[in-house]
Length: 65
Image (cartoon, rainbow, N blue to C red; front, side, top):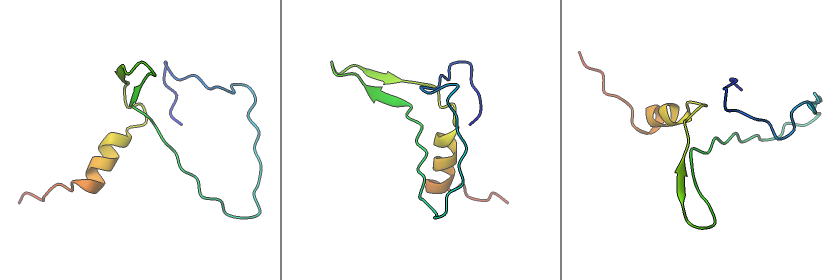
């Protein structure tokens, strides 16, 4: 993952690399909007750049020639 000044790992310093014998599906999620229990909505910077990538897939731009 791209390092960002505001990125903090919950398990910093406890990284371990393993080799898996079977393929396992992996889902990477980057939340940019969430709500606290009190209902306050919060937005964060899209440090993973997923919004732009998703928009390119869902809303392909027309070629202009």
